[in-house]
Amino acid sequence: QVQLVESGGGLVQAGGSLRLSCAASGRTFSRYAMGWFRQAPGKGRVFVAYISSTGDTPYYADSTKGRFTISMDNAKNTVDLQMNSLSPEDTAIYYCAYKRYYDQITYFQAMAAGNYAYWGQGTQVTVSS
Image (cartoon, rainbow, N blue to C red; front, side):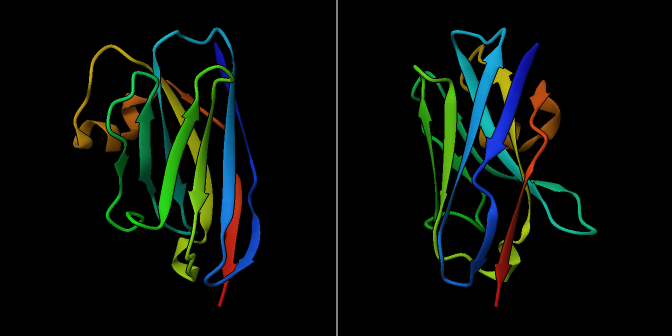
C-alpha cells in the first residue's frame, strides 16, 4: 500500500498564491506518476495536473495552465503544486493521486481518476473574493 498525505491548503485572497505538497510513503514504486485533482462543492472530481518520475512533460488542465506548476522530488517521493493568481473558482478540496508508471500516458489518460490506484485525504483550498 501507498499512503499519501497532502498539506498546504488554506484560505487566501483572490490573486494570491498557495503551495500544496503531497508526500508518498509505504510500498512506493521506483517509477511512478502523481496527479492533482480537485473537487468543488456539489461538483465532481476534476483533473488539475500530472507529473511522472521519469521526466515526461507534465500535463495541466486548461483552467490551470499558466497559473499552476507541478513539480516532483523523486528522492523524497513528494509532489508539489504551486498555485498562483488564484480566483474563487479555484476553491475546492485538492487531492493528490499516485500510480505506478509503466509507460508514458496521454493527456486524456492522465485526466482519468480511475487510472490512479492511491489517493490522499485531500486538503481544502478556499479563495475569497
